Image (cartoon, rainbow, N blue to C red; front, top):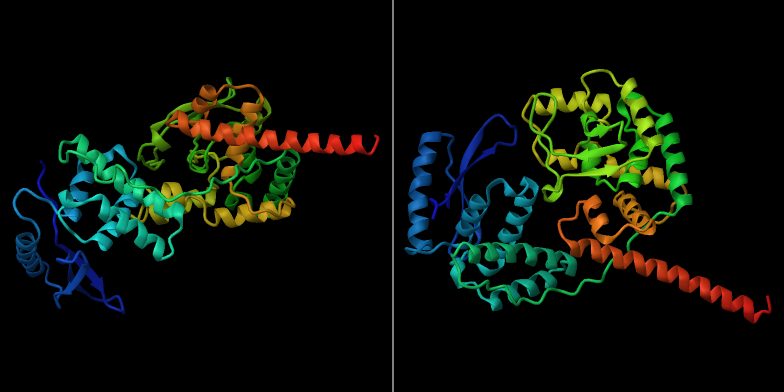
Amino acid sequence: MKSRRQLVRIWKRPSKDGLSFTYYLRYYDLDGKERLESLGHSDGKKAERQRLAKEKEVRMGFCPPGTMRLSEFVEDSLERTGDRIRPSTRHEYHEAMKDFIRVVGNIDYQSITLERAELYRQTCLDRGNSPATVKKKLIEIKRFFELAVKRKQLDENPLKYIDLPTVSKKKVRIYSEAECRRMLKAAGEFISERNDEATLRWDLLILVALESGMRRGELLNLSWSDIDFDEYTIDMMGKDDTAETWEWRIKDHEERTVPISQNTAQALMTLQERTPPGYPYVFIPQARYDFIQTELRAKGNWSYSDSRLTVINNFYKQWGSILLRAGIRKKGKFHDCRSTALSNWFAQGLSEYEVMRLAGHSSFDTTHKFYLAIKKDYLDKARQANVGLGLRLEMGE
């Protein structure tokens, strides 16, 4: 077993005027509650001595030989997992376990039982968390214990038989051909009213999304070198942290190749010809790229999660404006463009396996659930057509 993580950490808390700071110690008490203890000074060496003393005190009270408290178990598990998961996923899982600890206490991980997990589930529901949120948290917490079983730390997963909250299935939103045309027209009008160097090429972004089924993060991290203009394809590949590009990894590490039409490839080629040298990304406006490079990355204010969440400012606000301009009143997600692409593939006769590969789904179950949703949508349309036919016959038409 690897060396244990620190149970007590030092935190520098700045003063209100930002001109000074005070050291604090952060740790969990015997009841599993997080504590902040002010040291009242800004002496780094003295703070570390105090941290070590508190660390010894906490370990003596918290961890009998051969055991680990939940907080330490989480750190140990994440350390073992390493970079096999994205930083954003690591943060999400960590937050779920911290919430779990707040409810059940920072107890020995080997003493977790199904009853404690059920207590957590009910506590989440009682405080107003949606069933979908509670289900997601339980799945993430359950994963920690699944890994502990695989690593021979536990004989059985205590959450193995936990009943997950029932979540109603959301209807897959698919844009009609008419809606797609209106969106593209609205996107063209939207960007024509704004500065080219500071505005995302929404028309091309939407077009590529509708044809390739690419996710938002995949599109915003797309570089010119990923496009094969001869074959009319796009290679979905991660990016390394270099002077020109920032680190980004594909979801589930599913590198793949997706198709685009010849007309779309030509439109992208035209955009590339108009883009000055030194701008590797297809859809990031020049002004935004310069800001990221000089004001964020150069000053250490850029993290891995930013490559997924903040590449474009006000992305969803702009998307909402385009939908409104297109006359699409029902609130829609950009991800619905991906759903539309996948549904079109099914409509063209592609198999579930073929769609799974093109979509980059990590499991067949994901594609199959989507396929069932699409199939039901077609059945509903056919049923309505049949009802309409029956009415016409009754009227003697």
